[in-house]
Image (cartoon, rainbow, N blue to C red; front, top):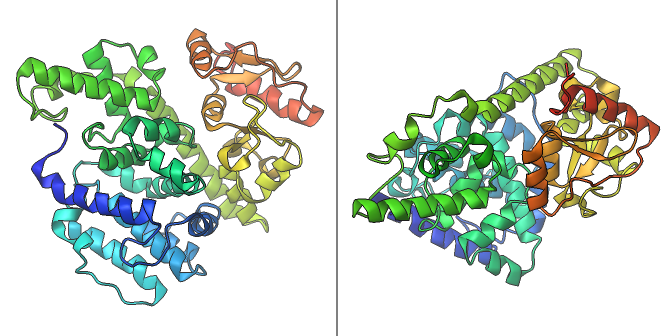
Length: 429
């Protein structure tokens, strides 16, 4: 089974967290009602919409700056979220985790019980090696956690209880949250809440490697799977292998299962998506440094625009009012997507509302990576290949969809997307 004896203290703490925080809106370390939509919205404004793009500060130095004017409840919530995020990593010591959580809490100016039962070694020892990336991308993982909780607490109490009833229910709901396919925290959250149904594997790449190896799938086939579908396949593989081996104490990270999938872990086709994301991250980092070096008056607006926030989001709302593909108009569930990527824009283009579309997260993912585009003259949806068409059909979207006529200014940017980003364009430079 996925659950190991040393996990029991962690899972017991998570059960209390679920009851206190998710179902009753109370805090982890106090009885204050900090786990609610209003506090998450404030944390979203102070952290997600107020990024610190400096390159000479640690995560916690940046966080302290971002929360410098925040209310005490907001800071406490940030500390408690970092506590929950820390439950996964076995490659960070309990002592270091306590220090990190304590320092954030003390930014409120209040004392903190460092001997709290949720801060004991048996709770903080971790259950998986999350690798370097989970910490280096901590701001992304925390941003995603905040986004998930905002969406969760925007639901009615009955709906929240329903979401927590089964792994599949929550996993399918998470599918519509921006950045879900890229975030390790998605897998951390589901394992901690449903350890009998979700594997302890946190790496999205390794999850697919396992599926490919045991199910004899190609990369194209595995890449079409939704995250929740990968969950179900992993569970079925473990049950099947447990029956075949005549034992229940099996793990994908231990023999004899590990050898089956690990031999393909260096296959270039398996890491293509991660390599592409790394390239995008590097281009964005270069763009941030360029803005920092120029130090324009609207520096914060330009940096905020990277994630579709601030002035850019307001400018886009003057041009577009809904996702043209799905028809969704609730903007808190949509991505303010740049047509010409932020990392390749000049200052004017970064903030230009005509350089954008409101897109549902799963559509934005395909658009951002160039798997789809929209003809700049007709608005017709264009797919890079048949696999993309099949993925859209599984989402209930006809490949013959058209988003309608674009304004002249939007068409200018879409022409760039057609020619420079679309993977179906053989002449793309």
